[in-house]
Length: 89
Image (tube, rainbow, N blue to C red; front, side):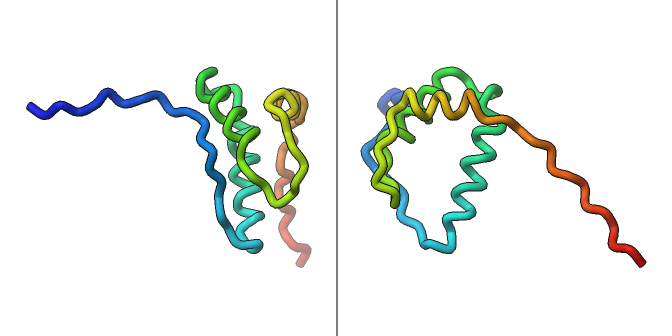
């Protein structure tokens, strides 16, 4: 029998992502996907993501507090993506 330590719950870490300028659109899409499914995430995961978002570094030097991020998530509206109309023949 091995003595494995109990897994610790996830916590916000003082780390950030390094990505190329061309990958920023992918990061924005992923962020939007998370916000679109926000209400289905467990409360503790929501709290973790807000805390992490507040401490990551960004290319924009503007500081964002956890309360600002939570207010943003609660205030954004979803919009249906319009269906593409077939090209006229």
